Length: 263
Image 1 (cartoon, rainbow, N blue to C red):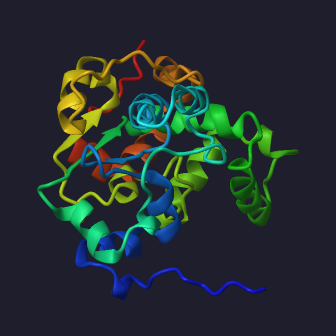
Image 2 (tube, one colour):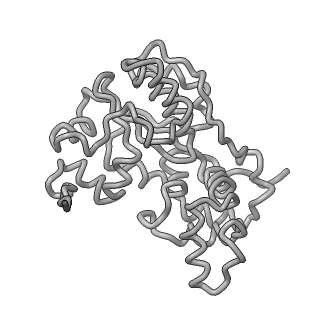
């Protein structure tokens, strides 16, 4: 039996939802937008910006309404959507209710963002150096350009930066997509944007945003690459300049300082 395409057209969605979908794509909006109808918040996920910690922490609190087993599954494997997600996803809501979540004062909306150079390096160390699926599109572009290495895991950091900074945001993998575009910044009105380097000191703020006063910052991403401490090992002034130019909106809108390469 064939299944009809039931994806909503952007024109059939609310004004803000439609603009967000046109900018980021329906798939990305569903994968990275986490809605709590009970606690009335929306967490906009930025991959490689503490998303494992956030999904384990917030997901554990949401799953606690179901069972301790559900909490354990969420916290053990926060990225594995095949097990369960305790959040409501955009595709599950009628257009008017989804628009309400993205615009109404009844909901709080927030995200965690990361300094772009360290985020890109983290993505490279995890996804490219390990030859994971996100490396293949980069490799394919290098093949077309005529200077691909022997395998995707052999892509150099300079090659990676050259490719991703030249791509339009819509064509970038979410792990290195420009963060302003990833979360619909300027389309969605946010109550707060938390910088990853300030997250440890921001759990009281997260508790207020999520209306969960018993929130505890006890969960941490197990796949940390330590990229922030390796900036000078991988970046040259030329590569850093490419990142600063390509991710200018992220630096400007989120107030990040450009990292220093001096040792």
